[in-house]
Amino acid sequence: MAFPLSILLIPYLIFLLLWIFFSFVGIFHLLNFGFKNLVTLMAIFIYVGVALFILIISINYINQIDWSFKIGLLNDIINQKLIFN
Amino acid sequence: MLSLYRLPNSLPDEKIIKVIRRDLFILIKKVDILILLVLLPLFFFYAITLNLPDLLTGNISLPIIILIISAYFLFLWLFFLFSFIDYYLDFWIVTNERIIDVQQNGFFSRIISEQKLDKIQDVTSEVHGMMATLFHFGNVQVQTAGAKQKFNFEDVPYPNNVRDLLIKLSNNKKPT
Image (cartoon, rainbow over all chains, first blue to last red; front, side, top):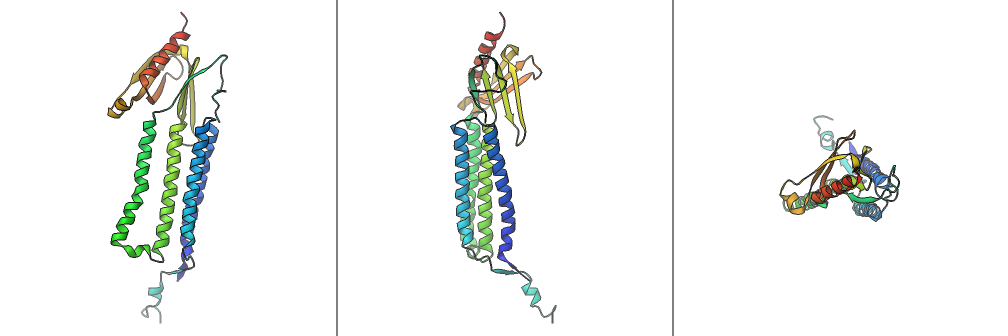
């Protein structure tokens, strides 16, 4: 049985969704409870900027992978003539 | 957002004297730990290059490494945001009428207490430890006659000055 390599993206995407949710929670708290001044706005701006930078670098490396590659977990067992004729 | 020009329940002729946060050293301590954690993957990369170089070219191992490193750095950056929020959203406001204590305990949990200056009975400042002594930060405890009897200013810069300020403002408010 073979699985495409892209199956590894599923847990990564779940993590990414959680990360985006908690990022929004953090920014919501800063906007709602922080002082109306430059420090609050700069903190949000820097956080979003660096986060986008990390995401762009990640996407750049992820795009270079061939995700259609098949992972054959059971290939060795299936090919054993002891189990299958 | 909280405006310094419009405090909640502001009293007539109320003016903000000082906004106090924990000393910057507390935030710097957390940033130092984060910097170490950012550098950690470099050590792992160096170890893998020396001992298991095939991992960096494998069809399965390389994508796993890329996804793990991406998730690791995103998580670290989010952790830094939480550390900053924990520092930035805890503060004390001293006005000419009252002291306001704002504490953010994690997410979706915020405690705001206030006490009139004429209810202050005792103010104590304390500095413990080498770092606190060198960098001039410590705690200020305010004993009041209100429902919340103790206000704690934790790890604030120049606690002796804060104590003097509170005593002076409190004495100005008390009837002679």
